[in-house]
Image (tube, rainbow, N blue to C red):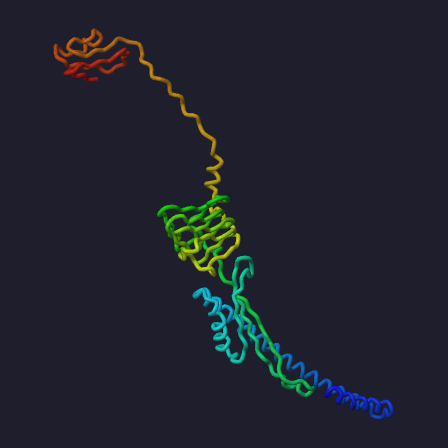
Length: 326
């Protein structure tokens, strides 16, 4: 109805302009001024919306970071929206609509993030003069990424690419709460406990049997295996199926590289032959000494003194009760 009502006066005015062109410039100028004022009013209202969007974006950024920190502390999705709303209200947007959600595989596969959207209604003020009324919504969205396990240094590293890279059994435990346990292949806890900052299987699986896994984050490329009855493992929100690069921290160590070049090289030991006895007379020290040592006897006693020298001896024998000094 409003459109038809506006159409007829404008049609009549057009006919009058055709019939009588006196003062046409003044009439056109009047219409031009009305249009100019209308466009200016609309531009002012749009500019107010752009300014509001900048404010919304700044507050949404803060709300997303706060919600992400709250989630990391509580591991509970229900805390996201209330936390974001509190931050938005504290920063002056009391009538804003706030939503918060946990995203998976953002920004990369296996990663998680918190997304917050802040929407406010901007009332139309000056543009009412050209028939516009009400308000329009201005929204802003911010995303805060949750930290992953990738940055935690490892205390235990298994480099086997197939099968178990790290495996425990029996009553064995691994306790490294300040660093990671990481393997290229499987991390298999068949023992009592693995307690680590992160547990990572770069290209395999994380396997648990009757034991306990304690970790802030568990990452695996293939699967996470644990009996249904065993609740002694990190909750689902702390487990991510994503491939990870597990590197050898000593791969570029120059001393190890030099040592590897020496593998297979050796100096053959000097050959040792069986000892040979030089030819010579037998020496028998006793109360009836052999002729070769009789001269070394002191009197008729069993005492012998052999002066320094080089001797060739065939066989040396010292009888009981005899004292021989060389």
